[in-house]
Length: 416
Ligand code: NIG
Ligand code: FE
Image (cartoon, rainbow, N blue to C red; front, side, top):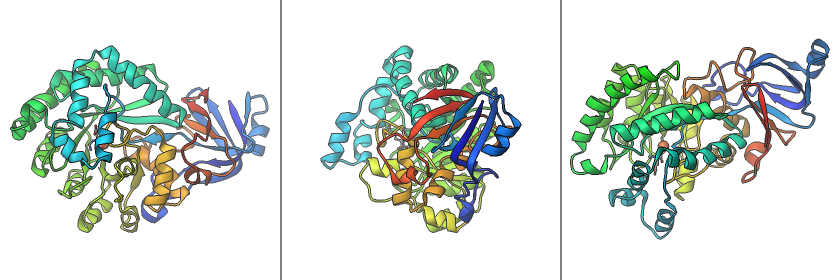
């Protein structure tokens, strides 16, 4: 398949973009791309490619932007149940952590996810994955973390494997048994931490090896926060995970600065996420490491909180910045990376070009997939979007509607 005549073809070529380099779109005007099977074969101008491949089935992208599919590197897209009442409570003045403390929040989703069937979990999750896909996300990280018991967590993992197999959205799974202290352990958080460290993680390792559905192990993530896991508990969980060969992620500094970002940098985590109240020293430590800083602007927006990730500081220090939706039933029910880009332009003070790079090649780096997805380069997976606009700056500028006309996943075209 030859896609040609794109007003702008954004290649994002050249690998993840650190600090000031963020925003190199690698634009080819009147661009074209040749796809063979699941891969990108040639990238260039329309003139070059039409001359070289005159008989290839062609898709005319005249007046359209062609770009890599979005990578959403942080979601909790799989859950059962409903938390709309909690949104109303928050509007009446209850805080997110107060609701969690009172046994609501994450724990209410845990109750619904534990008690429902696998079928119910799949049926409630599937439409969200399709919405993500139709809004241009071609690869998404998805976390467990609403089971908080070995069997329930593995069942979530099993559901993620099944949903990935169904496609077309490609799922990169993360184990998040340490998303909250399980309700049975409310008064004994250290015991729950020990359960994660000594039981869940080793069982996950064996289970994963038998499943072997992926050629890489899942990530392990922990919610390092007041009311969830302390810095010390987070360290125990991540250190053990690393020993067992799992790549690491962390939820750090969403509400309180406990030092999770620094911990992530010290342990060589793939990413540290949220980063709203991160201290200057922690930003420096993170920015000087290979750990990707993942900002989730839909979350403060969803909580009507005026504080966002100090993204410009991260960039000034030379950090690797990505953005994600954080899609979840509590703080940010948002399937759209386009909306995350619009927020990133306004509240993280990124240009549209920077936000696009943060949502594609850098987002791929945040899930250790930058060799295969996140840019349009020869040999990479053919995951791309045709947008209904002629200039990439419409991403960011516009919000609340879908600018995607077609999504191409592993060389297969889906019209939106
Ligand atoms: O990233 N902070 C922890 N986890 C999610 C919220 C999950 C929930 O409320 O269900 C987040 O914001
Ligand atoms: Fe999260």
